Length: 219
Image (cartoon, rainbow, N blue to C red; front, side):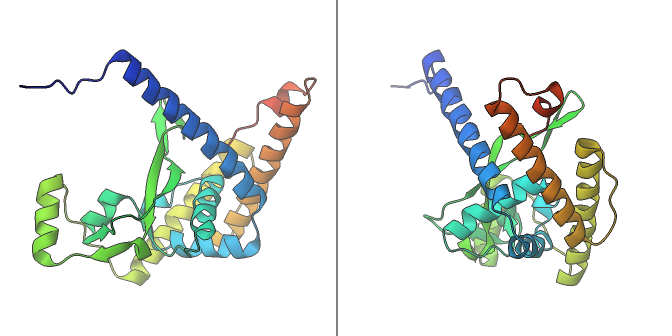
């Protein structure tokens, strides 16, 4: 007998609550990750950004959040992508591997927000697929094959996109115009985001905080 798979209102509500709790916990972890940032972390982040087109537009806080999750599991991230992204590139996530959570950039009514929580995997958590397996997986998941350019070309393109994203964050969120190499940009935006997060935490702890302090962005 056919059994309906439509979820009830209660089930949908429970799922929404779980997702909200997950997002709240992720936000707290992201703040801790940013506060613990150091030069070594920034250099490591630049390293995986150069090999990861999927994360070049992420905020400094988001990138530190992803980095912290991997290092806490003794994984040194070098190239990141989503499950589907790896399949498109001819690799598949090894069964049992755990993803790092990430806030996915979205635009709602013309404004960028990071509310949805997505997942990314490091290349060390994947394995290469043979030609036949790759073709079958692409067909089964209705995905298109992605041929990545030469590593040096890819790195230059990713770092250029990353630098543009860092400049945009500094300008739109903190009102600061910055120039320089990607390492300097990440360091500056990281410091700005860390200061904003600290100020917001202080404002939340003090009921008499000014409106200016309370209005600081999370990212």
